[in-house]
Image (cartoon, rainbow, N blue to C red; front, top):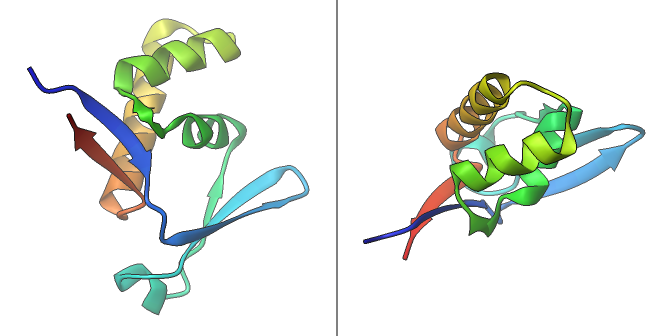
Length: 96
């Protein structure tokens, strides 16, 4: 059985400015644009946890442990965030 984990794409610059985290792609199609992504507090937390060792369920558990939110909200927010980042090529799924 293959296990799915999520990891950040390495081809970007991550910068913390005041209380916000910004992601700027430096390779691929997005590098040709002026796309910059600002992460919310929860988004930054999920981003920091997606280190290639955790799957979606692990990330949901991390969010539930760190923030006081209902489980369904955590699941929805994690799924939406991951979908957006994958659509832009900023996060990918890896399998064992």
